[in-house]
Length: 380
Image 1 (spheres, rainbow, N blue to C red):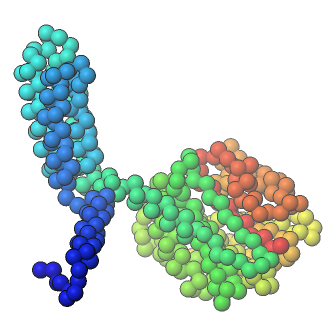
Image 2 (image 1 turned 120 degrees about the vertical axis):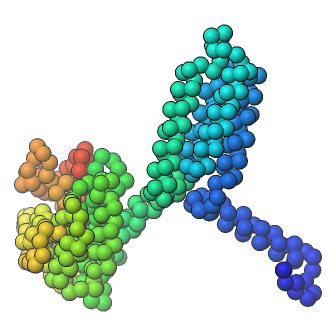
Image 3 (image 1 turned 30 degrees about the vertical axis):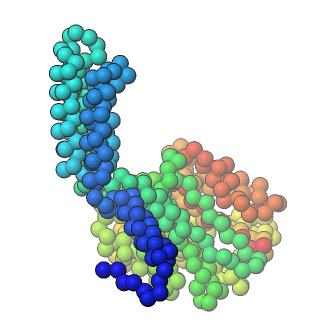
């Protein structure tokens, strides 16, 4: 029983009732969109459509042929649960029988219920039932499936954002999934530790590519993001290796490179787990230097050791870290690919490397059917 406040006017009471009704409608709409609501409303609409279509077919079969019954059947396959879908199929079968009786034998004219019509309706019904059973098994309704994938993609992108750096520093990352897809097996996690003085960034390439590696990429990016900055730098890859081993994936290895950069002095250390080497531009000499650290792949064996390589970024220096998809293809080995990348990067020496990550991928590996990622760190 609703509680009435003393002195409350009729206008205020109606406003409160309207507000409660609006909240109820909004909650029902959200539940329906997410698939948590009952499908009786959709079932009722589709059941009501079937006799309307059947009547229209009998009256004007030229404009509404008997095969029009595939419309509610197909919609039911996308909207309803398998148990409710069977009711739509039963109603459609009754409608076909009624249409056949009303229109007469199919040999008397083209606008009749022919064996081909029955085959088409049956094929669409079986397809819809397979779709509905698959959705029921996965537990993701079609109304929420695409939003779940969108959320998955956005979470990977958010976790790959680089932290804001102090003046005099610039960092950017560009990621290009294989085949123009929205999901990638490459990702970056980064944070500033030691009171903001140290930048830690991890570039990882998960085995597989595109959609095949998307779920593992999301899981690892979340785990690595939790480990990064919470452990001493030299303990990160060891902990990441142990995490992969505990997953017991059939294809569970990954390569990774861990950058630990002091933003005050410019000193850095690279620790690698089977990852391609980085390259550093020394602005004073204009020379590129390869920075190769030693370490095995992540997720291969326990007790792996990772040995870093050190360097210093001075004014004008640039450090580039990348995945193998950017520099290695079936027709080109990694040494040739790195030479090409360095050659294209030389074009940015005079103008600066802001906005260079995306353009370098476009120039070096635009149409490669592999995940490509490039991290660029510059000291102005």
